[in-house]
Length: 472
Image (cartoon, rainbow, N blue to C red; front, side, top):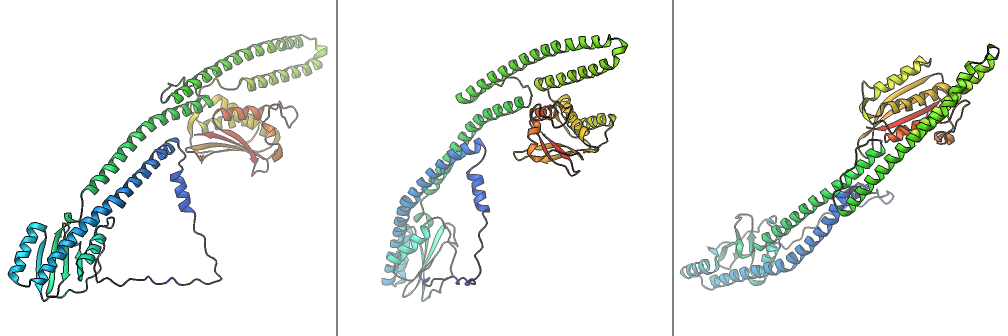
């Protein structure tokens, strides 16, 4: 900075825009970026933000109080003291041009004021070049320039770049140029570094401790969520250990009790359905025996009644399978592609052409028997209404992370009206004669037990597409 810098640089005016051109809107990417980091989706991120935001505000207030008040006052006082000493030395040198007197003044200034002085007789200062600020975040340079203007009242130039430990000041006197080398400690206080280090260090320490404790609390919640999701998909991981805060422990204990009640209910229902199955099939077996013992003259009537009995047994088996579900089977690592190939081979043995498009392999945890029943129901429905069936296995990303395994069944049949597709999943809702209306209901129940779902869409083959979605 320099006293000669009287001119202000004015930036060139921006060219005016045509009147008829509309101003383009700025992209909203910065807003999305801010929303992403100021409103994190996870509990850990939000909890840390709740802790970090007041901490940063407190730091900003404390730094402003120190920087805006204490540091400003101290900087002005130190700059004023140095400028006063330089002004006094310049005045003495101007009044006493004798070299011996000046040498004595320089010795006293070096001893008492810690200033290194030199005088260049008859010299004239050149217009100094503009220099970048050495300490742009501190008011030291500006305060020293202001103080020198007030207390020296002579042309001067300050150099903060040449020596990192000193400030070189040149003052234009009538007899020549006075060179002053002042140590930076005359205008700088080391308490600033100590304050900033203490402020930032304490904040980082507190934030680290808070993050560690919050991570432990969130870990307990994540374990609870993972256990609930696994139990919802039929994976029996056993009771979880209550840990974390009191409220999280209470939630874990409540989840364990709920899990046990559901297991007990499923076991009781399974036992009851097994008894119902036995009680219903016993009279049907007696009817089969009675029909088999009828005389030959009643053979035609017996054949029709036998078909009715077989239909009743098939319907009872479907009802019981729907009511029982597939919750007893535990998931195991299974190749989905091999399972789909096996189901398609069974359909081909029944006389239905099935085309399969799939990757070489796709291992994933599955309840193989249940999923085989799910895909078998879909192929049976397609086989009753279509001539051609195509099955494909694909992978797709998932919004919350991970991915989906897709099993897509296409046919060239009449399809289902879009307004009735959701109705087709309701139990006992049948759109064809001879159906029980439980095939799609059982299939969706199995898919949802795996954590996925089944969607009905229009097929590119002209019929219906059933998309089975399973989490990887």
